[in-house]
Image (tube, rainbow, N blue to C red; front, side, top):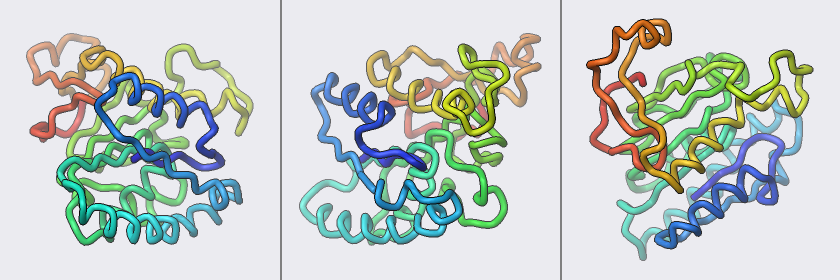
Length: 226
């Protein structure tokens, strides 16, 4: 199940790219959730309505998964979709096997709202690409990945974007692009356990644990920061 972010719908490139990548694998059924009726209001209103969206999805999943293996359910959410995924994990009548948060929404969720965390599923992996700006400034997954340091400006994104413009969301959107690529090439992104980007650059983490980032991240992973 894929849940899009704030101000999006299922026709957006983020959703279509993820869906197409799964279809190329030819080994999954995928549900793309369209909550655009609620996602295109003001950010504060969307955040306030996120639990209601999650409630509706929870009722559907509780009924649907009676006929399916819950171990095979994987929920992927981008931005606000990540936070909705967390709400679902806290409300369903079974334990979700895996939730993947693609740069979970940060504003309001850093301090005020309940946010996606490792207790929301048996395994929660999070990819941070705009940490502390549009993305949450917390490491709350079973495993948290920080590609290119996890912050803006991500490689290939404009250096001085106009606030709230398409370019301004470039780093935030890198998370779903990384994940989509990992569906096609499972081993393309290798994370190294490290406390900081400077330590990584200086070689202090060369002998540390390495884990694949993205679709193929093993559920046995338990080290926090890569």
